[in-house]
Structure formats: structure tokens, C-alpha cells
Image 1 (cartoon, rainbow, N blue to C red):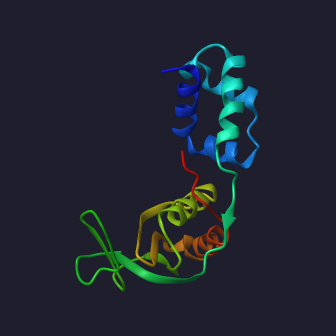
Image 2 (image 1 turned 180 degrees about the horizontal axis):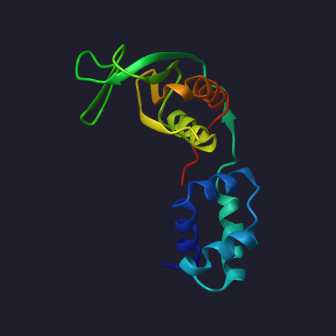
Amino acid sequence: MSLAETTREAVRSRPFLYSALRAGILNYTATARFLSDEVGDDTDAISTALTRFADDVPDFHAEKRDVRVVMQSGLGMADDDPLLVVGDAGFTPDSGSLTAVIATGNVDAAALSHVLARLVTDGISVIAAAVAEESLVVVVERRDGANAVRDVELALDSVPELGGR
């Protein structure tokens, strides 16, 4: 694989770098140093490869999603009539001390990814999460419920459009 291909793959394997590249805010020299152990020691060549890659990636655009966000407290792990099932874990209303934040409307995997990144940035631990059809659900500790609702709403106000290869 060429240095350019290796550099592109290294950036794609780190979504934060790819997003910064798309947004036009990536420092090529600093990124070349960051990637040099993996890509190669020639930071000037890596920086040049990053500059050329930037010309090929789509510009960063975000869109506001049309959604309704609600919170449902009292969620617990149980098998009876679950609101959310992830693997073998079912989360049922009125059976515990967790909170579900539910967004309905224009949601998809990109929206879920952006919501999760926002929650992680705010230090909110996500216990379970899923998206299907027009529903997105994240399960958090009850004490984080109100902040999680705010974060979900803010995240869905600016979901980055997907950027292809």
C-alpha cells in the first residue's frame, strides 16, 4: 500500500480525524506527527498526503433533524414487555432506576453516532442504545436523565451528514 493509501486508511480508522479533515480544521503537521509511528517517519510526506486527501473528502455539513425527544424514568432490566432489547438484555418500564431517552422522527445510525459522541463528551455513561426505523433510544442512569435529554436534543440539532469514501 502506498503512503497516501496508508495515510487515508489511518485517518478513516480515527473518525475524529476524518471529521476534522472534512471540517477543514485539521492541522496537517500535528496530524502527521500523530500518525508517523503507524504510517511512516516522513512527516512531510504524510502532511502532503493529508493535504491531498482533504481535496477529495466531502465538505462538512450538518442538518437539524425533525424529532421529538422524551424521557422515561423507572427503566430496569427485565424480560417482560421490554422497551429496548440489546443482545440478551431487555429494558422494561417501571422496573428499575434507569432512564430511557427516546427520540422519534428522522433518526438513523448517523444520528445515533452523533448522540453517543455528545453524551461521551459530557461524561454521561450510556448503558444501552439502539436505533431502528423512526426511533432512537439511549438508556442512562436516572441521575443523568435530564442532562441526557438536553444532550440528545442538542446533538439532533446538528447531525453531520455522512461523508463517503
